Image (cartoon, rainbow, N blue to C red; front, side, top):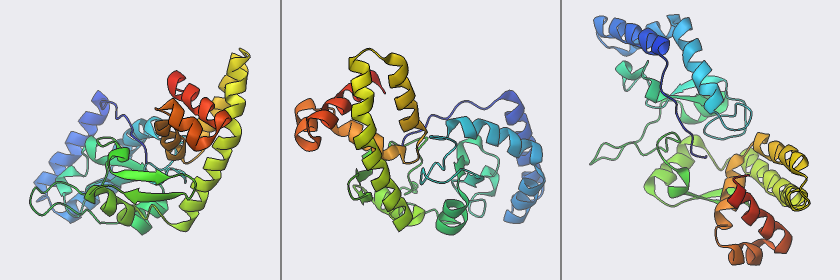
Length: 240
């Protein structure tokens, strides 16, 4: 997972969502009312999707696993728990069908004392505050309770994701020094082409994890070797 910036809703989206929310209230604010209104709201769903897709990492990747295509509008706090948030723009994320229907489903753990959600919302939280990614193994390690619950609910360490992150780590090891060599010889167009390949790949969390480790140049080279370490430092300084 990586941080994502949520834009303000358009006036049209606000109008469509407020209209549907009013209907849910009029029908008793039940789960059945929320589900019925959501099923009918093609215009609202299209407007929501049109804002979510540019937010998504890579090429419209799932905002949870960063691997599969984001096909579903997920209600971060499920309709079953909060019918009146069904059309809340702040409650919508783009997910793949596996993360939405097989992994997360209706789960929404909360702190028993504060009531705060114990799942990472990448539009609110920096996932790196709660999760540590080990690029070479492709596995996430929880730093906080929120990280622990997020790994479990989103199934972030399932084998296909772990192997995909390992592949991305190897790709970064190969392409970042190539990108850096182009920068050093002032081939800026070529460098941008290589950078675009890296940005479009799934598992942008791997590149971000490597980049965070490059914040201390001496440690970057000690950890990754001279070529990759120097490339990571340069990538971090130029924002890729």
